[in-house]
Image 1 (tube, rainbow, N blue to C red):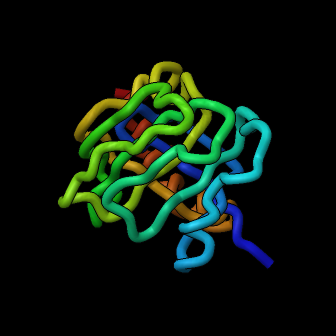
Image 2: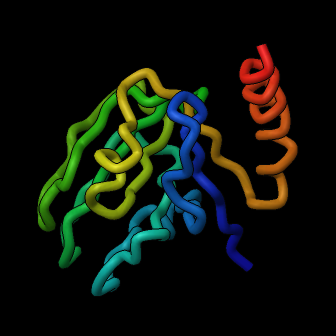
Length: 139
């Protein structure tokens, strides 16, 4: 069974997606989103490893978030049209392909730190963030 990942922007303290599938094999990276008629607002794929992606064979635009090996945002492409080749970023370790307007609505920017993990692990990763946030409010 395919794992489903959550994508959380630690810098902006917001979720980008709760239903991202990893494209982490050669076959899955080649197929990507080809054959899909649309991408729901909570879906996406995480292409690992990747320095660039294409939208050849897609019928809808995408937002692309390029991440380094530490999942820090190094490049953003908003609403790349179908049948295009995205930029190649040699320092990228992976690329998130998400629905259009994800970058805008989350205010994601270059330098933001992403947390990508399965839903069961999200609570333990965010507990220190939540505690720090509550401590800051009490002061």
